[in-house]
Length: 292
Ligand SMILES: C[S@@+](CC[C@H](N)C(=O)[O-])C[C@H]1O[C@@H](n2cnc3c(N)ncnc32)[C@H](O)[C@@H]1O
Image (cartoon, rainbow, N blue to C red; front, side, top):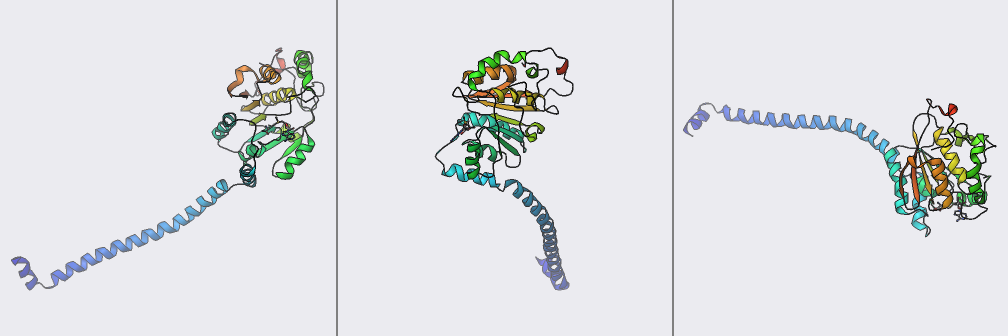
């Protein structure tokens, strides 16, 4: 204390200088902080804006999703598939984690849900009944649906299964779809978009197959197997078939979609992963008389 007192008395400016240095250091720190914050804010704004723009594009609900929310919030009718059945498809959709090509047989109370699950991809519905297409599209014009004429009736299912092998145009080695009039199981006159697209997911929950004159799902099952096998590239096609508790769906699934391709199932829904035959295929030299 004595020394300090002496020093202060001898050199009165020392104390003031020290305070000046402390003040300068504090001002320096504040200046550096202001400078850094300004720089960060400027760059963050640019970064933040672009992030917001990207995530807005991804997260803003699309018209089809808004329609679906409104529909299911105000409708007393729910899809026929159970929560567990729908979850099988939804889990596959989540695992893809990208927009995809989704072909759905039949328009129904589930249509807005399927389309809403794929807001940035392509979802196309194939419906047997033109009047039902009009009714559904009147309420949900965002859905894309095509009317498909069928050449089969449910009452022919057993006979077709017994005899298709004798028609070369239905054989595993030669079966095609477009223009294949000879094979009654081939959906031969669909719009080109259906043939030209590599469908990632196919949902077969139509046409109707619960009375003798109904088209039945025979042609849908046969044709989707042919389509999946013949797709370009090496990707698999996920095929979901509903109502497998019925004799025809079960028999045709086992004949064409094949037990070895069945990867999941719950309730009345089976999930198949059908591999593409690809370029190395020996299909055209094959004498195989079965698809499985
Ligand atoms: C088994 S339903 C498909 C039902 C659909 N998965 C659902 O959850 O609503 C198959 C076919 O029944 C017909 N259908 C379904 N609902 C209908 C309705 N309310 N009126 C007329 N036809 C209907 C359509 O031809 C449809 O393709």
